[in-house]
Length: 214
Image (cartoon, rainbow, N blue to C red; front, side, top):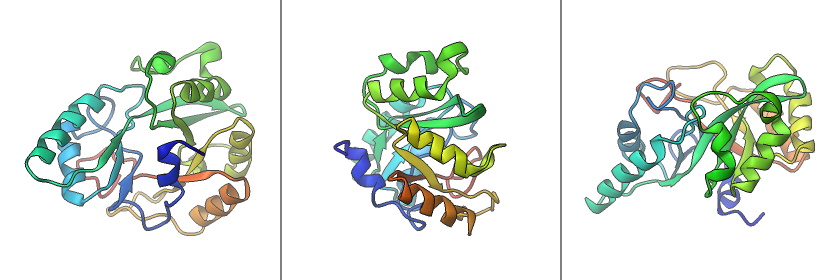
């Protein structure tokens, strides 16, 4: 896959988060507790190399965080690469799920999903969401696959059929104070996504005031 983010996701493993990369976190632009500026400062302090802010149906945090990171870089700090991101609600195999749009460039194809609330009708279907993400030049990752009412195995297989690019493989389902990928379940997700040829993403899904946990 030629997308530059795909090369990064190909190296993601259980040790990647929260100190090297974070592709799932939230700010006050949706339901998080950190401002985009505060999150950018924390990401820099943590030494992150890759970061995507994935607010729900909002891209307002991106330019704010980008400006803060540029300022920190001018001050001599090593800052993470900031990738565009958004978390989108969708229906996959009759189940309401969340899809992470990562590393996109053109916003126009995603505008129905950047209005601060979930889409409705045909636009809510996962197949339509994935086409929009690809049309915007991004990658589609199924967020926290073991948090839904349907078994993660059938959801990941359905995602593969719809040409998702990745699965959020390493996730803290136990919501520990210090983020840690949940044993067993994450290993099962990892094995299945490898069998299906899908990339792995990871993220803290931070809604609190610390990027070290959820």
